[in-house]
Image (cartoon, rainbow, N blue to C red; front, side, top):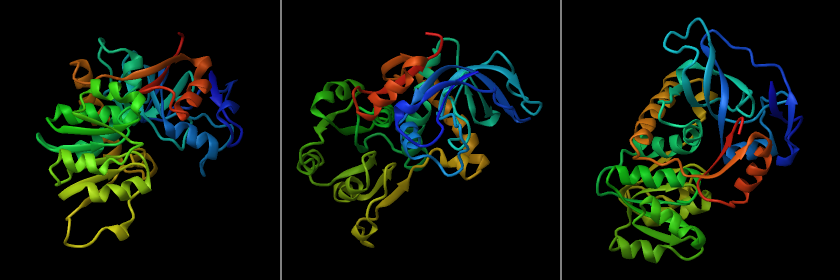
Length: 326
């Protein structure tokens, strides 16, 4: 099969298309012919720094959508010909290839009315946002939610998911991407290059937000502590806040670490199965036009490395998707 592989950690553009053997499928796995690939920051970060368990050459990529061409003997609910999408184990051969073998209990089905590229845009970004807001926090109608990076992959889905639950959304982004985030449904859009604290307190009458999803990093998450109301929630995906800034019996703040792919790395089967459930739930919203895939860049397989470079440099809003056979 054709696949992008690396021989060692290095530059994104060191990715090259190689002829490699098709993956070996286990009894509880399905073999999927990839039709579309979702690109994520974790992809280029691991290409650049590597991962401890990788054996080279390694095929990166964690998100994919395609058609099952074979199913292991323990896969009773899936069969060849079915359309599926998934977030897979980053420690194994990934989705930057024509074929990939994935555990059957971690895939979700794609209805006929949804394209492969729309499905491929969901897993890493939308699952992360949904896990934070639905599984960990349980946001509700009327909550005021602060979402950092509303023009990015996770942030753009988080804005939509929050609005679907009836929350009021404050989102940060660059001034250039403000209209994009407003069109997603954000009630207030703040330029992250300014001091946002005063604006947040004005919006919330000095109370702070009920929920914050931080996609920016440790320092930003630490700064968020002062932006959250009593009994509020802070979910982080890019670094935990400084615990020294949290004082007992003053704010009753709940901190949530979101590590979507950790379900695979920890070997926790129930959490892996929940990836499939989250995919099913989000796919229903997508099919009902309650969730948009936010595809800001769509490229061919041959253009994949350049698309990763554009993702790293934040040259577009939303998701980057690779379409096979385009």
